[in-house]
Length: 553
Image 1 (tube, rainbow, N blue to C red):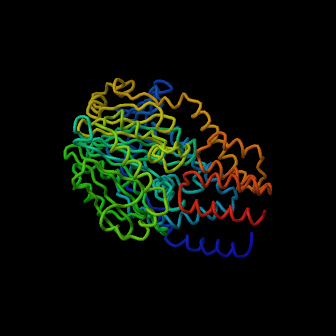
Image 2 (spheres, rainbow, N blue to C red):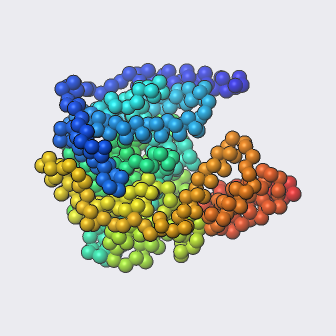
Image 3 (cartoon, rainbow, N blue to C red):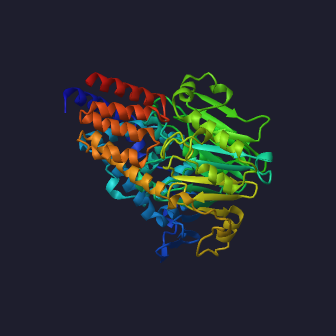
């Protein structure tokens, strides 16, 4: 380790002590926690209960969770019932961290930086949610307390979505969503759909929880989530308000404030109209940029609430019966925003926006089945073949989930594995809460008759090849990161498995370049350039590699 790095490490460690100790020691009010029932009953390998709280795994592999009571009661029941699921996610997350940062010294450095970055987060989280997170955290894995105490660690995890897209081109999450109504839907009712393209490793994506929450204050609501997460990324409440989040272009934040998922959760729990949703969003300080699509069944409308650390806007379409959202802002306050304009020009956001607009416009009389078909579409604009896994596609074949809402009927469809390609499971929110409140639940609360079948694509040779390609792609990139020599045979196999994808040809070109076979490198780089390259920076890198190869030749 060189002296310069030691100096940087010392400076950050010094900074980390400023305000961090207080953050590490702060705790919410947990008065009365010792009186809360913690007796979990295991009825089978797929069914647990704690009082009226329930956890059941359905045949599609989705865990159905019901929680009720005040914040501490909900948190304790959540953590207790889902403890194995929380452990799975913590292990997946921390293993990913160890894989990315193998050095113990660097991880110590990272711990100091993360602690300093999150030192003020607790000041921006409502007491209710801190209590709920505390209850969940009692069932976290003690082995990770060295990184941060359980409660503090769980609080940090709720900012992972925000930090994730702040660290990778400031936009890790490439989600796409739409809303349609009136002449665009079969019955004129509001219909919304979205893909949540957040990827944190295969193990992280294995787990799905359909959580149905009956709090002591505010609205009953459902959200599609995972172990340990009380924030919302996709959800709907009993008043027909839906919430989904799409990352926007952000500048690098230097201090965490309100995590977007907790803001979205607050809207679900406390908003009955789009106006109330706007009021809730406006009072919270965030630390990254985000589009929050809010649908209202009773108002039969959808809006975008566009938040960032320094700006706020609301976008609503006029003289149209569809609303499209990707990863750039559309409201007036952001029309001249340099970062937003750069995202439109250089990223894959505008391409996906145009493709979603095309699919929604061309699909007559949308219904849930047609909406799912749109979310599963892997082609480019005008049905161009752009390769499987291309981030310009609506379906990038990496989504944590897809979800469809019909808020006027309080119905929701959630995808099962893999990606958004498995069976979409239907739930009627009114019926679900009626069953849980009557204590009549000992199996799935899904409305199986309304389920939407898995994609036929899963049974094709193309899907098998894509899965092989994805594993090989990860393997090759890991070899490059470790500066290992990649076998030439892998170059040809990559392009055989996914011939329409520019990145398959690009990786093959890098392999030939590594072997000093510059002629073949140029051929493969040029083949990559002939295909739909994802972003402007990707194209610039590709052109740079072509020039370097010619110079070497």
